[in-house]
Length: 113
Image (tube, rainbow, N blue to C red):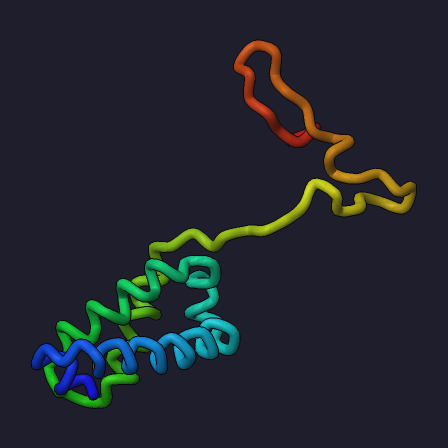
């Protein structure tokens, strides 16, 4: 499929991208070196497309794709999803209760940080 896609078959490239997206999503959920890709779906699609274009038939394509994602994940900051409605402590206070704005700089920050 990779070779056919490299020759310009658009349907093969679409099908290959779809299947590889499933595989990469599974890798991101399972393997620690790839967890930083979580939330970067557009960038993952671009990496898959670039790997298809640049693959030179040495070794397995899936190994090449995995290593490319692993090495490029080293420079990515993981996305941290958290809510201001999360409980803090035992008294029922939430994180929004500790948000303050610095009057001099205008920066919004959590109290104490």
